[in-house]
Length: 395
Image (tube, rainbow, N blue to C red; front, top):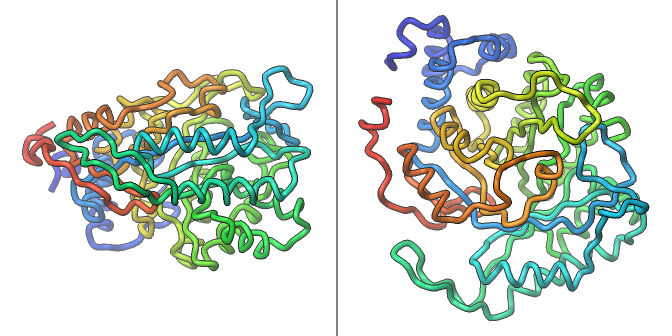
């Protein structure tokens, strides 16, 4: 038994997890309320290693925000702009394609595309964007320079389009005057490969009304993902923590995700997002700390027993804390990203991008085996050279 567990108040929950029993909502709240972060991390690390051994993944991807014009005015959002704002923007489809073409030269396997609820772009714009990006797969791609860990890329590549949040999908259905299923089916036919998990925030109605009044309800968010999963699609999901929600609200949020996963098995991972308190309309006296972020990741890993993966989002956490999170239940640190706007416009001080070498180094230093993954968290390339397990366990 782990040293931190032997005399911990959480030992009974550790034994419950080892026995393969599902922890209850009350158990999850107790984990959140515990100050024994070492024991909490040990339990989460046990769950993670049982699922993913000592591998930790990253993805080579690029973010593209097609526009930040939005008809909503979510209180926590620092990204959205109105047409009258000088720093608003929208990209044409050729501009998006060119960004994607340049990124393909760097070896990306995924484009992550989201934006605001644009007040005037037609539904045809989104279909054209997806089709034009998919057409890049047939363009010959120059091989990358070979290195000890990077073989040359093939002449053509599979480009995964991970696009749109649930509220964007609902907006597009309204634009198209189609049902949710019809809209998702048409987007899929145009090239949509998977949905992003953004926009979940916190599901409890009272909290949503304080931070994102006018946004889709929890039921609507879950229904978008439900219908996408029923069409055979996969998606990630998120939880925005560290603002006006209670610990019980976090448990309620995780419960609803776990229940939908029991039903559809369509979520690939949870990506907890630390609230960025700068430059928005929600004053927070105590923003998320490192302690809070690590316990949130750990409880999420323990509670979401039907989720295969948990991502430590380095943009919100910073790479150093994301690296530590690999010993607190996370098995992924996300991707290269290249150009991130949403968190940085809210005050994030992390870099705009990470190199593959930096991510591999961070994973190795945490005593894990680096694995380049695809969007579905399937391994593309496993790299040698992780810290031996017996050395890592003596931390």
